[in-house]
Image (cartoon, rainbow, N blue to C red; front, side):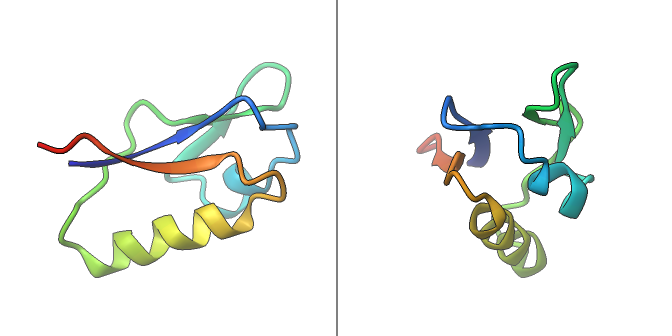
Length: 70
């Protein structure tokens, strides 16, 4: 199963939640968080492209695609 996380490199630029509000939201200080209701569909090309675009939008490279191996 594929997932996404934002790691400690996040500097709060807000690109993720401005461009992809269906996947990300800001915390109280403006740092990006993965929305708890965000779903990642492994075999959906639209979602895979969306994930790739989200990773590419982050100026700090803080968005990471993770694979749980299941």
